[in-house]
Image (cartoon, rainbow, N blue to C red; front, top):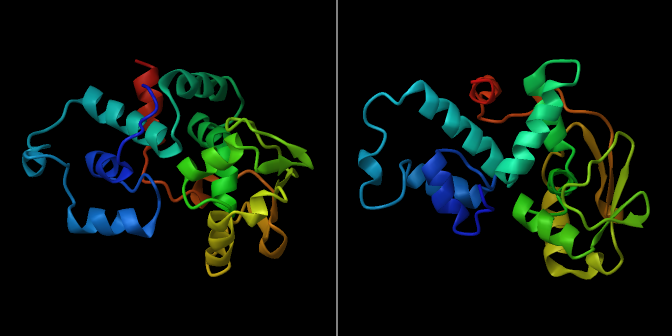
Length: 206
């Protein structure tokens, strides 16, 4: 699955969840709670097959985090070989991606934007610039916006907006100084994701 570069709103309507996790997209979903296109309101009639249900769940999660099929499957296989609950471990690996952590801390309004900030070299990990979106953040790592990045209007606006929101409980944020710490791994109950990861396990186990 190649990286989708079209309308995230249309894709969210196709999958039935807010893939951008923004208020703007949620408003569109509330207004048009059906798939896009001429026949969108007629899609989904009839009982989908077990395979279709599991495939859609896998697609939802991969698109939520903006990851291609190869990388997504590699992460799943890694999670399957780690002690613990496979589904939870898998979600934790996804949450540890640098682009996702930048999004969770509020430096970016979406994961797409976070990936762009990382790729353009505006993010540092423990004082060193990292431009790889898939970089795996460890517990205790400090994530900081570079001096140049702090002058970007979007990042400034995001930080002002984040001051009015509750930060994810597994990260600590110092909004005034554009930095945060990945303090712990999120528990499954911390992640309010509309995903049934057991379906994804069954999909890859078939």
